[in-house]
Length: 428
Ligand code: HEM
Image (cartoon, rainbow, N blue to C red; front, side):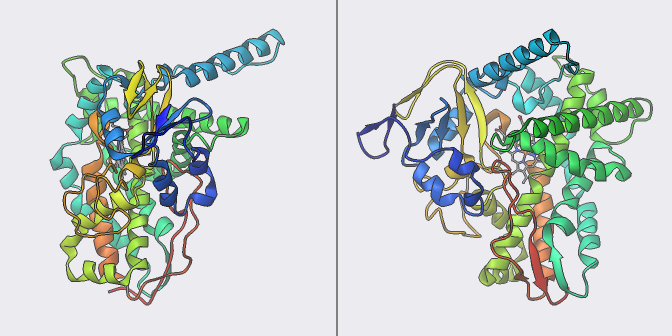
């Protein structure tokens, strides 16, 4: 039973359905839908999952130890696994060839304490401020190289020509992936990112493609880690292999799943932050003017972007026990969908939530999550976005959007434009 906000009426279901978020017709602007969601802060869906859309409730659940990030605890996942096992048993009984099942370690974003904390500590020991800040001049150089290819002006695709290649180059370099192998990660990363969006995996063929990409990236990582074992360098993977934690070092399987997570998490998100940031400034000549007059504004500008038009729209969790919240009992085993992007637009928490205020103060948005899974890559993502957006605002002469709204990718969880075509007269 859900209680309608501001009223005592008890309602069974939210007026809106989660499927609407996944429906591509809302992808260019899902925020009016979120406003309707927030009328019912915690709403049960037909499939037994719960959507949480208000700031306080999302934060409370993100900090609640009764809430698990491990999908293996969810009833829906258990049912899906049982069905898969039954299908395998049937195929074996019918004498059909059955692919071998690979034991895969879930990445630590999908684990709970204590193991989550151990793996996260080892990663954090390598993600040092000095290492991240040490990337600044390198990031500036990459941005310059990409932009300098367009001195004549004309048209630039912010996604393909800058926002997509930049994060993958940076994370590959930090991890210790050779530059010539970067291109292979684009295809793998986009496929694997669909795992975070339940609406996208609809056919067995898609499932196979994703599993194939997962296998290929793990094979690649296994070989790379072997090479780094004998020939280590000043990079995060070599450091993670060496680092011991009070609760033990990473196992080879944990190393692989962590390396894959860092590649994907840092890739499919930062691209959207830079693209959404460019979209906002090119749409609004006033914003562009403010950024040009005060380049330091880019710091609060990026925080406002993470609130107003964030790359990560929702994350899922599972209730480990019955949880009472906002007049609703979420039962043990239920899937909980936390709509972070809706929480960041909650008028109870943010003044004028639908306004983009470039110098907004006290901006505790949910763009990087909250609690024990708070984004480990936040400092890196911020540096990349600051540099890219500062340079774009400074250098593009008379930029205008060629297509508005731009075409969006299908992924509603990691949401962002597929292309962002900008016409401009040249570069400063
Ligand atoms: C976690 C957003 C960039 C690595 C998260 C979470 C969010 C997020 C919302 C919380 C997930 C949850 O609670 O389930 C973003 C955004 C980024 C970005 C918006 C860019 C604009 C990066 C980068 C890296 C990274 C550059 C690494 C290179 C991770 C990892 C986690 C995480 C490993 C899991 C942390 C844990 O479970 O303890 N990120 N991220 N992210 N992010 Fe990011």
